[in-house]
Amino acid sequence: MTEIILISIFIVATIVGYILINNVPSLLHTPLMSGMNALSGVTVLGAIAATAGAVILFNNGDKIFGLIFGFIAIALATINVVGGFAITDRMLKMIVKKKDKSEE
Image (cartoon, one colour):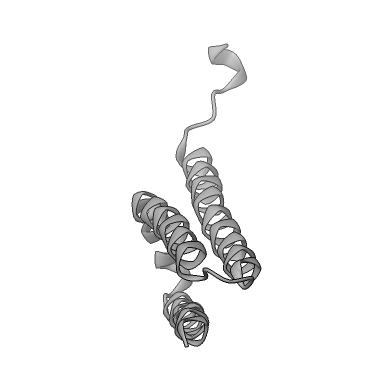
């Protein structure tokens, strides 16, 4: 029963996240993403905590499912954090003024 609940939470969170990101206009996506990097770190912590909870709940031989889904959650959350920082860095490079050759 707990396996179904954990898998359902994972699937619902994935769908809601996808819908939310798709509804953000492209002009707002980069500034919002740079502001969300700290909250994305919380997502990684949540994925780690959920994985630990899943491994503790599965006392029998089903721990492998908790580990697999936990690894997927942690990997996707980490990709989200790294992508957010990459987008922020790219955005900041676009804003910085380029030096003229005469100023060097």
